[in-house]
Amino acid sequence: MFDRLRLSADSPTHAAWLATLLENLMASANAPSGPPPASKAFIAALPRPKSLAPDATCPICTEPLDEKDSDARSLPCGHTFDRECVVPWLELRNTCPMCRLELPTDAPPKPPTPDPAQFVTTRYHVDSDDGEDDVYGMYG
Ligand SMILES: [Zn+2]
Ligand SMILES: [Zn+2]
Image (tube, rainbow, N blue to C red; front, top):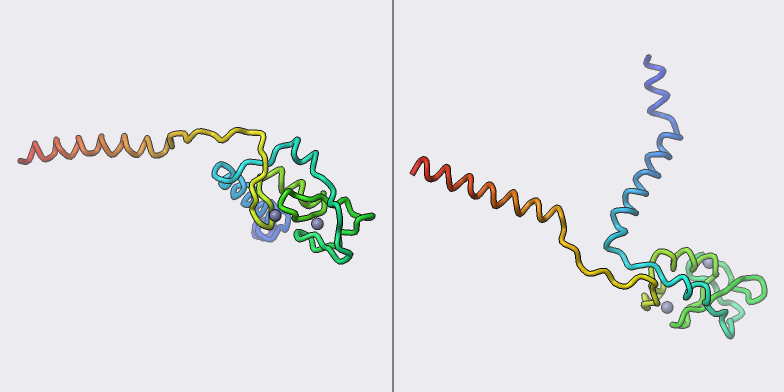
């Protein structure tokens, strides 16, 4: 019995699973307030840089951006990245990773929606106020 407990606590798979779960939770918690992804058409049409310094590197992975070997892509602000580095980024948010220049998005900005949690709290607050009034009426 003790052996079983020890096994499950020390299991690296379990630790990895917990880490993944935590990561997913953080990601989904951050998602609603974060910027929208960049437009798919915009990502697909990202231009190659017209010219590239011989020692240019991708700011994300710091690998050299060789015009021949690397599939480099330029953003409108002039920052240049590996395609494989910048595309996953742009699929999550519509900003340049370096200067936060806003890029086109597919989704129109959502109108602010009432927060259901706040609505419940307000209702509860009003109800409890009524209750307090009754209590005061009883004793006063
Ligand atoms: Zn890179
Ligand atoms: Zn930039």
